[in-house]
Image 1 (cartoon, one colour):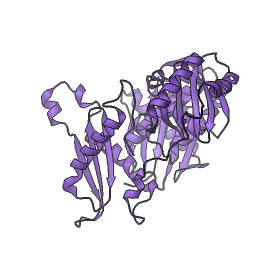
Image 2 (cartoon, helix red, strand yellow):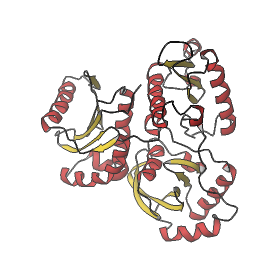
Image 3 (cartoon, helix red, strand yellow):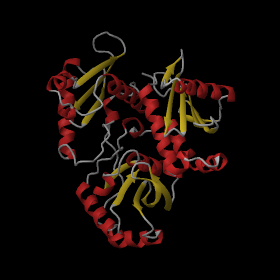
Image 4 (cartoon, helix red, strand yellow):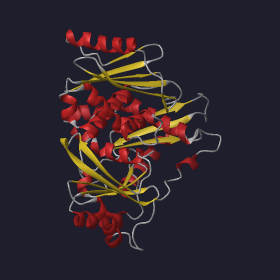
Amino acid sequence: MGEGTGGSVHLLCLAASSGVPLFCRSSRGGAPSRQQLPFSVIGSLNGVHMFGQNLEVQLSSARTKDTTVVWKSFHDSITLIVLSSEEGTSELKLERLLQMVFGAMVLFVGLEELTNIRNVERLKKELRASYHLIDSFLGDSELIGDLTQCVDCVIPPEGPLLQEALSGFAEAMGTGFVSLMVSGRVVSATEGWWRLGTPEAVLLPWLVGSLPPQAARDYPVYLPHGSPTVPHRLLTLTLLPGLELCLLCGPRPPLSQLDPQVNQEWLLPSGPRGPQEGPPHHRLFNPSGPSPEQRRRLLRHFYALVTSTHFPPEPLEKVEDDVSRAQLPRACYLVLGPEEPGTGLRLIALQLGLRLLLLLLAPQSPTHGLRSLATHTLHTLSRLLGGEGREGLPLAPPK
């Protein structure tokens, strides 16, 4: 259960046809590292993958005593390889990491450049722009969208007010894609923004959260799902420290039009305030309990465990066979630590429709009451979020 602690992660990107490395990124202990793998190791890792392909065998992952390796090819053009010696890492996490990395590559250079490589050296230079985003995937982030493939969100107290303001602003700007973000999390967004496909729905907030503070930006981006070959413009405007207004649009409007329009139409004295402090979930633990970072790692690892071993990849409603549906688990729990009564952290996962709730509870929590507590919590949150949510609204599990 020590995912993300210690150990190192190496990410390799190669041209599939030639095996030429395009880049190598590394992290150690959750922080970027300059450590590079020897070329002989890179060649061996790519060679064994190509050897399997020639025999019509798909090599997807392997484990040694202290390292997990995952391979993945994209469009028969790009091969990504990740090696992790982090304690407790999961193949699910590494597989989704590679999906995020390729999505980031498309976001910056477009799919055409990656599927029809004409000049390797030029592609290497163009991909440098994606390093800061890719490095943030390898680091110890507070976000979880890379693993869940859902958008990290903040539930604002002035939800209807924010929604109305954004809709009016989007209409004035001539675009249907507008959102408010804080630290890589979506606070509120227009219906058009919520309908963005995966992976851009996760990548765009993550990109904005990974960039250094700036008053305004005009960023060309490709949408890996919606527009992988034609770039769009991502415009951002800082309203308050940490709070950014984001637009996805075409040639118009110009960035210079954003500021006066916001001042006239939106940032009024009665308008939205700054980002609110998140729920004080850390107060459920005493000071001697696990730190917030440790709790986050435990929940990430627990999510990977239950997703890969217990819960189906599709929601229960999409399972057609009634007998199969009845046999699928809806909840599971785990106790970490000593087996003596009253000791050990409690982790419980409960799936209801499209939502999955993960709870980390103190050792004093009685095991027999976990499911009742989780059910009550999930129903309460569902009412707060508005039933099952609008169609197409991606939601990350509460953390």
